[in-house]
Image (cartoon, one colour):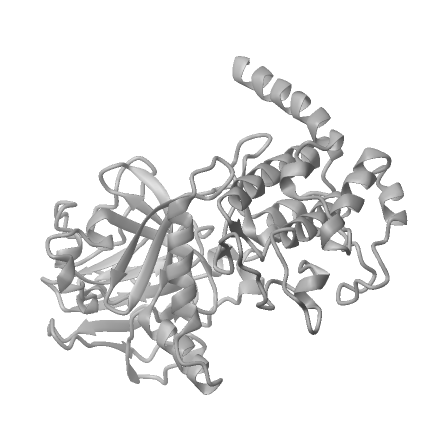
Length: 452
């Protein structure tokens, strides 16, 4: 039976080509192609079902020629390639074969020769024609025909889970939101709740790669895996409106998947670059929310240690609600512990974190990172002429060019204080007059919007 692209709706779960019920949807699918670029309106998730092991992909609509038709992809051949599953559930293999296509079939950046076949592994990136680079994907989204292949037949659940439902029993994956060295973030619909979430997926092969890297450096255990377990534990401890919430986590085979609250407004860095500069009241509102989240975290004994615009997510409300995220480098402290690990992002890390022969540091390292970030929010410039050298001190004169004077500058000076013992902690910073005066204005704006 021929298969077509699944159709995605914001109010209901994806229905696969075979029209099976959502309770058994993933049991009947051996492979899925998940779009990499949600901005391409011509792409939908493609599911391949057990009742058909081989699928032909192409641009031609001629009856009986292709099982999956992508007619609007100009670089795709009339009959482009085939994807075939061997039907073996225990040692499952999938083979992709180029059908002498004109522009080639790509796995990652590797082009298959004409008529050449290759094993297709879980999480492989497929492109029908030359893949669009990340640099071009925003400028030419309609030409971005990249997919992530999920080998559903190869996903094995931990027998210890018993009858517990797995990730694919509950969630329907729509498209890729972003990719990192060890993780891929996807947008997924909870079938029963009909609510969208972001799922941070760590495939087993990438975790094994991290383990190999750790072993080559003389580290006996995978720090990446430990960091993931730690992130889940930390997120489970927290419940705050300005912290990206964790719903649940799945450990299936060697893979780990973390289901998180979806923040459709994107990250703060993207938000800033879409605007010339943020007005001071909006910057004050965002800073207040971040301070409130940090105050909450620090009371639980949690230090973020990697606070930066990319790790602050936003809702689509006006003004947006801030959600602090990415606690992979966070650390739970007891009352006697002292942090000594050098970590974080250079340029946002406090001087005591990067100092040689340091005697350790405490939670006010987050205050320094906050100060750098607020300075950047207000000016879109780093506070230091050279972001690798904090010894020269911040460029305070630049604030005058943006009319940030008086209380605004005083607030930043309290955060960008080189002496940790004199630096303002978030619990104190949130009471600073630069923030408390703005809070009333923000509440008024929100009330007016709700009433309107």
